[in-house]
Length: 316
Image (cartoon, rainbow, N blue to C red; front, side):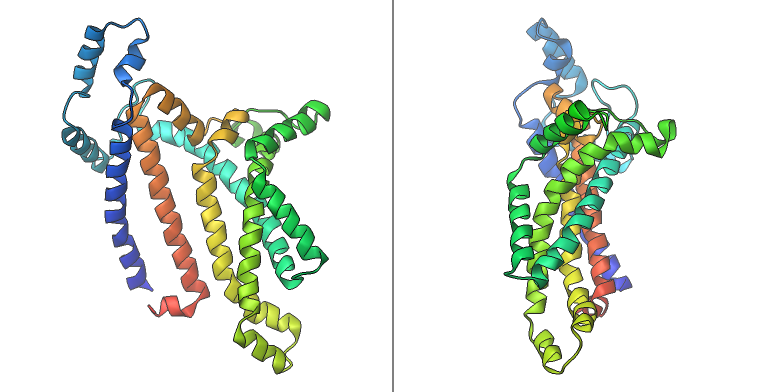
């Protein structure tokens, strides 16, 4: 298992190198000039040219890339053109709300999707399966921003149960108030993600329940509960863990619209504002950080595989 972990860690190096190149090229080949965005619409071409030269934007792309990459290796992710403070501090301030929103959403999605997906597989073709499948199809078709606006209209405007938007850290207002502000965006994201997770959990369980060793256990007269808990569910956990991990990565990188609707100062909102202002350094740092997080989540999923499936621990 130790060799497997070391091998997986070593594979992160070329992956992150390729990702860094892709990030840099995509951002710098996008139309727009950060210097013009900084100076405003009334800036003269001469002033824009002078500022671009002073910021190094006129240097060849390879020179700019290796200058940025050398800074990353030294722990310097660059300096924002519009936000004061170190890049590490900027990312930390915006990452915490996104991680909280993602964690609450994936918890809601898992609590909904895993039991319903398993129930749909066990009751295949019967009424529970049909109802759950209909729910999942509706959820997949419904955009998260539309569900979010509907929750605001119902729970905030009509009933007055929850605040419509905003974010308050736990350290300032405590858990109760913090969760009241995070409830609606978490439900909006978690419910939509749960719909897809239900389908994938159901498929994983159906594949296991239809395998030869399950039929053999039934033929031997093994109790149904023991077949389900000891044989079917444990082997289906590999697929379920994969679904949960992919959902976490999806929510971490795709919460931009929800954060904007509920006015949550997370990574998604930071990225959107930085794209609009052509703040190259912030965009590069955010995408690199999200990419690194996704790679680490993939590694964690592989390690969980090793705990579930002995073949992974044996290097097979």
